[in-house]
Image (tube, rainbow, N blue to C red):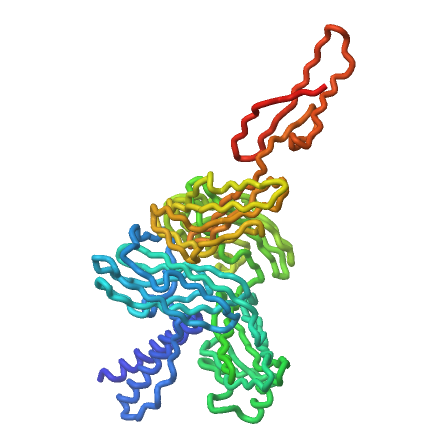
Length: 577
């Protein structure tokens, strides 16, 4: 008697899950697949039918928002930091990835060990950078000297140097872990498909091309995607309108039609696949296309923003970075582009959270009209140092649109507030040049950590060939209150009378720091009447008094200027007539 109602209830549940998957495909897809498998098994058991094999369920690390304690722990409240992180040991102390290439995934593991006296409960991990995707392999309590691992996927979308912060959440607070990566161009000239913006109902058809940099033929063995909103088709063939896992080719080989398309001659480039995307709902869609070749596997990120109208705000995320004092603030301008065929009006801009440290200025409350095709700067947002922690929120821009979804544009913002500084000894940053001869001066640079958290100093550089850095260890760790000789700096004078300042630039896990290095020659500058200041030894100090009568007196006063940081005593003045 209960079998029929239960079957109908499960069927209704599957329909609801399928509808949810159409709206939130990335979040719901694995769960919907699992629900459908369970539903099929139930019907098979009830009717005595042999069930078919369960379909492949793919829950990728970078898409699993909550699995294994991973994903983003976004919050509008400050993140509580662990005040004393000495009981946690990371190996390596910081992750530095070099020689990476765009669209080539890389997985690394970081070991976390509890070296303290008390058990620590690991609750999850998050990343503040879209190119670093962490996952905690095993959440739970770590006893003394017990270890676990964080798996980090790095998938870059651009060439350059990137730095991210992985937060490890524990019952004692969050612990920051720094990840850096340097990437170059992909030798196969495969590029990510990101930043695309389309309107509802518009079809987006990008192509993926592959270049063969080798001396022999390159074979693409398989192309597939697990995203339900992406469809694949071979060049000059109709788009496959199926959903779920789209696969062309196979691990065992390809058919004749595919083989000709996917065999790429040396030093040649060829389009191997077309994507097709269309949506009738607004939102941001993220997915991946997997390319398997006989040389290397590639992963192409796909990111498409769908809006009812072509209204776009930049930057997409307002990142105020790190503020290190209550007096420090950082400002950014917001820009809007109207790609609609009709003008729009910007009605209001506000922060729903009403963060007292966030200030909005420059927005005309009477409304701002934006004609089709125009780009305007419409507001300036400033974040001031307040409570310490990681701050996140969103601004909401209201425009005149009848659709509530398209009328409200969310603009996320984030900031890190961490009070402190890196101190240095001022007298160790001065170097004297010696006119007429080449000399070298070596200084030991002492750095003290005045922050409440450990500081990891990644790199040090001086953009001047006259300075050389030695005895520096990259990724040097300074615990709170530490003062160490971080490096030696040698200045070589080129024999001229030099007077200038250069910066010693330190890259850390908190912020960038610049220490001014002053080069001086130790000579006074003199000025006669209204002339220019010159070195006193090179200046013509003749004082022209003109013609005076008997008994008349005139007075002129030469000016002395000390332009360098060292103390100078004026001991003697001589006048010659």
